[in-house]
Image (cartoon, rainbow, N blue to C red):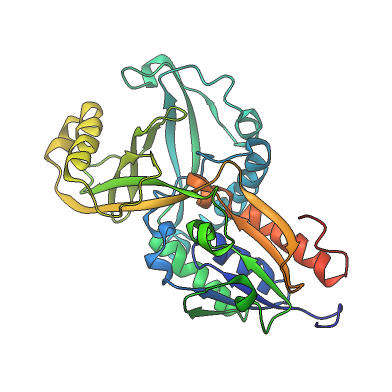
Length: 335
């Protein structure tokens, strides 16, 4: 084990947004960090994400909101350099067909500067309530590249390889951080981890500048429009325990049709891409520390569902705190 006064050798399993932000927090704190990932960042679920900073399909809400507020702060600062970081501040409306007064996000609403209730004329047809806000909207391919570059600048490295066990991943390290997402189902193993399939369509943007999301709790079909530099992202779906990564043409047509009910010109927009991602869902995020069978300290950070981009930096702060406890000889303190 490395001396308590020095940085640790740490292996981070998983190269998506959760793994990269955790690795950056650790590397910038002076640890020697290597990310182990089967896929390049562009091949992870994070690359498919719409990129809106807003808590979605993630529990427990109390902790998720705190993580989200921290990420909001970080992404707002990164939005000052959008071409480099992929983060921009964009105004939009979050709506629902029911009143969202008791949706567990009161602390989020209090924390977002300028957020307000949407007026009736600002709501799409069929929506009963909504919130207007200016929030970070992240171009994920650009953002993931930025994260990799920032990690490298801090001395961290990325190694492309399959990880077969957490013990093997940390065999020559002082600690391992498990950010394996959906892979945790087999790697831990954790049967509570399951996919929530999301399909989206990217079309040429006819001039829509604001984001718009309608996503009732638990709904398998959602409607969202996210203007990105590479096109207008239309969504979407949230299919529990669906494992296919192949776009369904009928689902794609339904997504475009829902968007076109709000903006008829989208019915004629040229389709640029079809994408499918598998959100790594769990009844609640697992962000805990334990010792593996051989005594290796391990911090688990997975199960973020549809909120990975939104909570990544807040979760990375907690990972750093837990690793500091390991370095000081006080951790892991949770199992």
